[in-house]
Length: 187
Picture 1 (cartoon, rainbow, N blue to C red):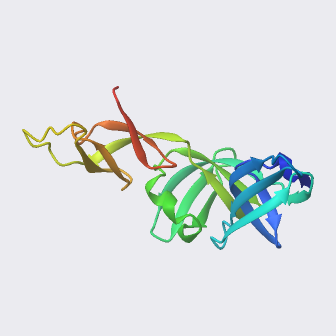
Picture 2 (cartoon, one colour; picture 1 turned 90 degrees about the horizontal axis):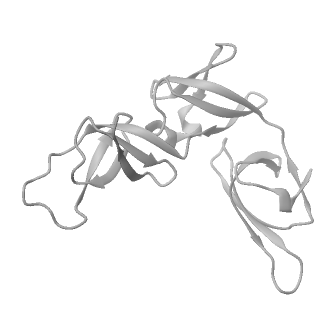
Picture 3 (cartoon, rainbow, N blue to C red; picture 1 turned 135 degrees about the vertical axis):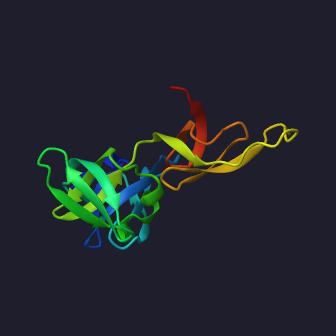
């Protein structure tokens, strides 16, 4: 048990008998009365989103998770396949548990996976990732309106709005939380 004031983004909590991952948290200290925390949580097993407002001195039940560094191998349309870096043990996670991650994870890259027993609670995707542009339309001469942009597709299938000068085969840095283009990466 921990105090609600100690809750941080990414923590695992047990609420209503189910594990939840804290997605957002906001602390409010009103002029009168006691401080409280607004917490938004998501269940990795059901996808349910739960919003709670808890006084900071009240206790919530945190759960201990086992973080494993794992290499993402591939997906077959139904399962993600991983290999644990330390033991080389392979395991799978249903894609329905983390459907949005299909276009964010790159084959061969390592990710930290939080496990509660044998249940995966979270796959930690880095905040910024470099992707290779797999498909991009060529810029048309004269199409130089200020701030012109186009949609490209990365090697993982992620669609990103980029400036018009980005070409196929180039590397781009993308914010994985917002799925927005940050900059072109030169080797």
